Length: 403
Length: 221
Ligand SMILES: Nc1ncnc2c1ncn2[C@@H]1O[C@H](COP(=O)(O)OP(=O)(O)O)[C@@H](O)[C@H]1O
Ligand SMILES: [Mg+2]
Image 1 (tube, rainbow over the protein chains, first blue to last red):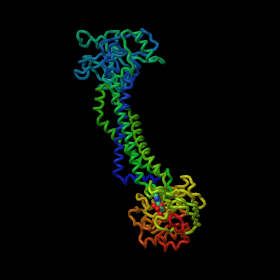
Image 2 (image 1 turned 90 degrees about the vertical axis):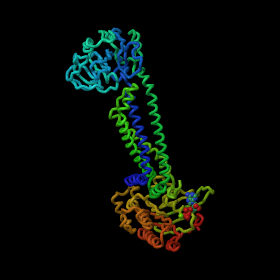
Image 3 (image 1 turned 180 degrees about the vertical axis):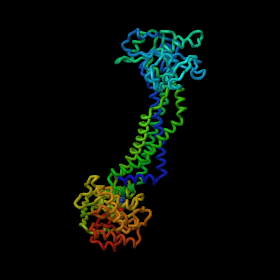
Image 4 (image 1 turned 90 degrees about the horizontal axis):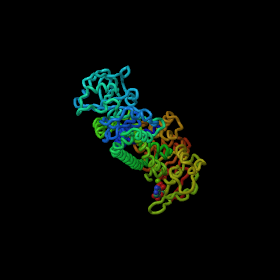
């Protein structure tokens, strides 16, 4: 009813300082909740998958590789250890579906990036690959040829432009979308053929070229399970068939990082729960006081025939308006804060080995909507009980200021 | 119109049980003007509140127009208060954040039976009748106590109540204002035929009533 709604609004306006305080408190609470949830979802998303986000279920690498757990291990880490390129094919494993071999060479002084930058040159088999090409965001209007390179999202050069690697000209064929997977972001991808052609131009390191450049050798395989096969089956099959190999699955490879992050996430979560609980308590204490203070008015409304639901509705509307506005402000605040600290946050996370990709817009909007709805719900719940209790009392007791 | 049987109200206080109203039987026929008199604390307000559906009796019954008031469900009781009863309190009882016209229209809007435009025309008419035609848009704080009481009477009348209950509606007003307001109430009783029950200290005024109910210690004497 319009008059009751305007009563609710006017009541808020009558106690402006208190209303503003309530709105501010809810705004702070919901901005923490919104920011926390967005970060958690983003981090969780970015982490949960690692190379599985690229479409692989597991990775087969030489035993002894990847002993240090960093973000880079989410794809094949460059290493001096190698596997035979046909190791998996020869074994004919039923549990292995597709397997994409990769050669990874971490090169200095390549001419890509600034002088001392380490650049991962990643060779793949264009026919068997399923983790690089699906991520192509833009590409030339033709097939991949020898001499073409694909750039990770972290690198920038116009499509079709020339890129010198160790002095040899290459064409930028395509660019990958953001994956949040370190090697992918900074990598320079090319076919095995192109990588092999580069081998001669590479300076020798300690007298020898990287072992992986030798024909028939790879750094590892990204593996997709056969339909119906389990990770465990595939793991055992691979380990028994391929000597000197080690199997990395999404979960186990990430456990180190996960543990490191668990504290952070749990901290955020605890803060959110605390924030929520205190918001709910605060709102309900505040509204107990507001209801008590407004007994006379409620009694009058009841005396002239307001139904219980109308009285409760008015009080709840008042609370929902205040906390809803607080929620909207909180989300706005959260967006501003994340904008402000975006760079340092992403930098920090990537430093501790967490690949980070922001939640996409639609899901961010969903989180924002949830935060606002939650804030309003806290208002509704906080006001509901005191309003319900008061509205059940005798009108006469209420107008006399009792109850 | 009104029939109270063995109507009682006990309050539990720190000093023990207070019998504010103790076993009152009261009948008031349709269209009558009845006055309730008695000393302060004798139980008049408590009786009125039980009749008007504002305070649940500890024992006994109230029937208004044949309806057992306290046997009604919560929502039916709200509708009863809204439609059948016009209550004028002893104190300022307008909602301070609403204009006079909104205050008067509110009971009709709560009932939700009439279209808003019609309600507002009627509310304006009632305020005019009470001599407040110039204050439709004013807020309660902008008019005098006497004018506020008149507006409260207009509000009590908006839904054409069967029973108009006025609990010492003029006790805090000056004599001249009291006479004017009483005239309005009596006019409603005479012209519209609304049954009027008035609690008053003013014996001269009570003399004009067709029925005088004298209460002492919660009982009729
Ligand atoms: N809510 C209450 N709690 C305790 N005692 C009450 C309450 N309301 C009224 N009383 C007592 O009941 C008696 C009658 O009060 P009331 O009906 O207000 O008298 P009157 O209107 O005739 O002055 C008084 O003694 C008063 O103190
Ligand atoms: Mg009294």
